[in-house]
Length: 492
Image 1: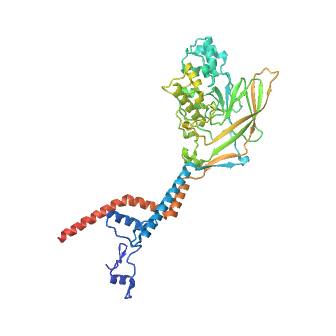
Image 2: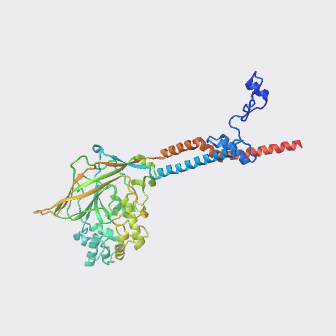
């Protein structure tokens, strides 16, 4: 054994060999010279005990080696177990706190008051004529759909053109035309509103189906998803969002909206649709309405996208998750949830909802059913929790405050005019990442190092000793047993 001074982790016990290796010319060795590298260990009898001793004595987890050291007083063993267990409990509790923070408080709202850098998007405008049936179109439209032109038919479609949830209980009981044709007929009977009314050559102008009837929409990049043509073609394709939307570029801006009929006018985010509870402004003919439009905005930084929806508590437009819309907006979610309630309680879907195969369109009697359940339709309330309608991550809110109105005199025009003074926001809110996954790993790693002296290598050791190394250990023990049996037989 010349030159071999160690066997595993034990120094060779032979005095002559040890003296040749380390002492050279010395003739004596102190009695307490250690014979082992590292802390000595106990020698258990069972294979499981030996395996634990091997792990505890070689692991990088601090404190485990004290559990397998011989000649320890029971009080010392108790204190070692107590402190190791206490450290492990503290680590687990802190890890749960860090995980809860990562799941529920990963974002923070910060305020930006640098007004000179603000870029405010212009709102989408929805114009819903109060009486949305052009009576002069009735004869031609009735002829197109082979409808007998009777007072009952005229009364029914005139009522249907301006139907609301509040007056649905008064729906005339007319059954001469199938309910699934009503929307097409109303689309042909609608009032005329000329295009390019905002003088901006908007490519997103469209006639949109809403809960307030068929409305003219401009500047809305999602209005196309609620058009009759989109529904009839069973279209589910998404329209690319433009890189740059129309924006205001300074103070002193005014919005002028003029229509030739009395109408309900709503303004909202350009990537949102209106619902029944969206604030509206009633504009009457021959009256100029003046008001102030105030704006507030919440933006979300790109690094928040790495979080799950439950963590950021908001959705982006392309997150989807709705059954009857190809994209997600909060109002789309509210509309879909409201239609599900109507479908469950009245066994139909109203004519202003996107058709679903196998579900009938509500007839006149079922419209009355909808009117009787309006208290369950959360028309002017926050949607119930079962709707799961989370806010949008990027949203601009517009609010109109009335100031004064003036009547037109001595003019042959029957215009309805709204003049809005745009009030720019003083601050913009940003939703940004506060506690990401790397922060979670850093926190848990720091706590593990503080309480257990552990590192990534320590957890790799635990996994290794709990899985792969067990197989090697069992195989090695079987080989030793087989070798010992062979030696015993040779002696016999």
